[in-house]
Image (cartoon, rainbow, N blue to C red; front, side):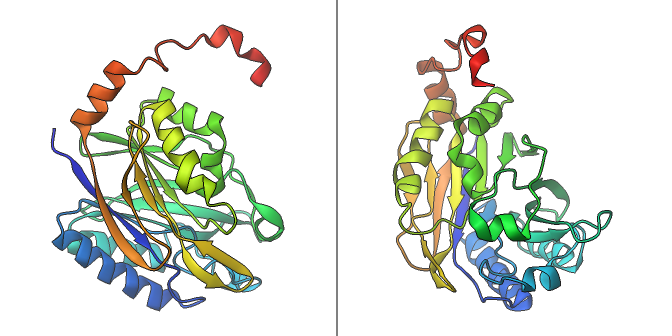
Length: 268
């Protein structure tokens, strides 16, 4: 099967400026498509910025709001799948806002929608409601793609659930801050190895309000290595998700086959 070239947009965009961030997403999609990518992943809360405080209530949109329609158009115009993070306003529950992510296919069709289940720190706990659907998947060509957000990937149970459900590529829009560099440098590659899947981890970069984002976006492979890695600044990094390498690695690595679930009851 052909490899899926995957582009990770490492950028914090423009704080509070949704229109500008959609333009940045559009430009990145054009560059990614020109480089042969079939997928572009942008960071957590990319459409609005992360450190927007009370403006979250003003900038949050429904899952099918105008920004979603614009992002679908970007995907269709450039002919590649597009995933990104944004604050979602629940139209059925007044005042409820989720830290969410969307994925559109190369034809602009909606493929997946996810609400962050593990909120990080006082800032997120103040402004967001945690999601309650832990396993979200979609098909992207020949691959099964899963979706989660930042802190979610740091819980081994989350990623193992994706692996057991057949996920080949886990998309993780992220807003990781200093001094947690160990997550992209070590945790994410280990998660990919122990679960025998790819993880696309797209982070923000630079200072934003009280936060300092560390970059280091990565495409981690099932061999536990970073198949592509960004530095600390704004960058578009590309790497290949290779189904043949994935199949060979799964045949050689017995973690999922050798599990003994009957012994693990105490975990829950």
